[in-house]
Amino acid sequence: MSRTPRSRLLRGAAGLMLAGAVHALTFAPGPLPDWVLAITQILALAIAARVTLTAPSAKQAWMRGWLFGFTTYAVGLYWLFISMHRYGDLAAPLAVAGVLALSAFLALFPATASALTRRFAPLAPDSKPSAILASTLTWAAMWAGFEWLRAVLLTGFPWLNIGYAHVDSPIAGWAPVLGVHGMAFVAAFVAAAIASLWQPSRKKAMDSRQAMAAGIAVALAAAGWPLSRVDWSSPTGDPLNVRLIQGNIEQSQKFDPALLEQSLVRHLEMTALPPAAGVPAPQLVILPETVLPVFQDQLDPRIWDAWRGVAARGNMTIAMGVPLHDRINGRERYTNSVIGFDGNTPVEQLVGGSTAMRYDKRHLVPWGEYVPPGFHWFVDMLNIPLGDFDRGGERQTPFAVGGQHIAFNICYEDLFGPDLLPALQPGDKGEPGATILVNVSNLGWFGDSWALRQHLQIGRLRTMETARPMLTATNTGITAAIDAKGHVAAQLAPLQAGVLPVSVQGMTGLTPYARFGDKLALALVGLALIAAIGTGRKSRRP
Image (cartoon, rainbow, N blue to C red):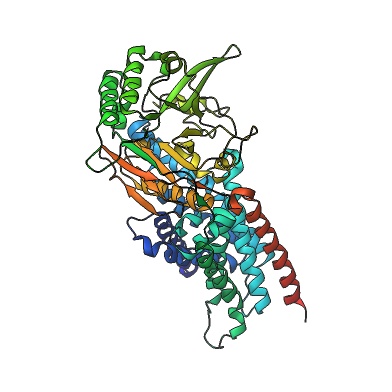
């Protein structure tokens, strides 16, 4: 039997895996520069669109979509190996298997999207313009729809959504209207339309009408530029002077009881630092997630009194990430939290975890912060402390500091745009919505990896969706201030201890995305499918 078909199959698989690997590089700057991310993402995705839309069968499309997705996730999420092996003490082969297993699962979403598109709207040679439009719309709708499903199924894990590659492209203008999933639709539509332009044979010239889908897709993407010029929010109150703390505590040392005092002293000293010449004194100091790596009631009350003293001498409010243990209605409760306090906060409130300013993390990390049923055996293999928390409420009152209202989120909660929206709305009793967003994280679990830059890119997109500034206070980086348009105003270098003084202007007003969440993007997906059905029927008429 000839080896040619097998060789062709292997070359095709290798090319598709290469496209998937390049695709994985487009979700944050480094190693690729920021200006090339969007176009590289579109071209890599166009390869996936072409090979799946023209696959011999839906089964072949599924396999090709899965291979592309698997490579994208395995390369783009390689840093999970660091947390499981280096810091979780999981054997290297098992850590590799864990990353590959997750990637294989996540790849089911693009695989299924590809198979359904091939089944109902294949891209045939010499297709009519209406058939091309139907195929490209269906592919974009399926891709965006399954990206949304990946964000909600089994608590969701929407890391590496293709929208994040377009934070610096015209498509970003759609963020305040459609959110990241709407941006994913536009990016996928452009990619599929470009794929439809490729002609396997040059014997027949292309009919210019066959470029109709590409023209519509490019126009839709370009429409994001004027949208980006719209001011979706307006300033409110005076700018807030904030100091962000990046302690840079090595993850292997963070939970070492022998080094607890050293870590606390470092953060206390950085908080108490006098402002540099010409820099206003901070009204608010923000420290990272679990800056205190034990429950608050395990700490000597004299240490809490020292923190309160620093707040009193600096006439400041301090917000820090703390795991809390308290009792509600006779039930023990454990939460990954942020507390806020000043010089007047009683020590008893700090020890009891009952401060007026408190945020409890709601969207917990599976296997890291809660154990899914049936998986205790896996968690028992990992050396990860503080691993089974209770959830916080859907809307928690923003912290009121200096006339601004600050909504916190912790760790990867900023990956879930809809989860941040309740805090922007007024409370049941008329309390003001958030004017500033803050994310506190400990990305030390992932070393000096792409995770740090990918996470900053995610934060930038959340500011565009909500038209709110966001501050990020992290243990090892990237600590930054992002304005309401998604621009990084200031940041600290990763893996270095430091303080970042910033002045942040609070904003008020609701974007369409803040009002409706993912509903508009899902409506767009539905309309695209309806349009695809209509144009597909038209193309089949004689």
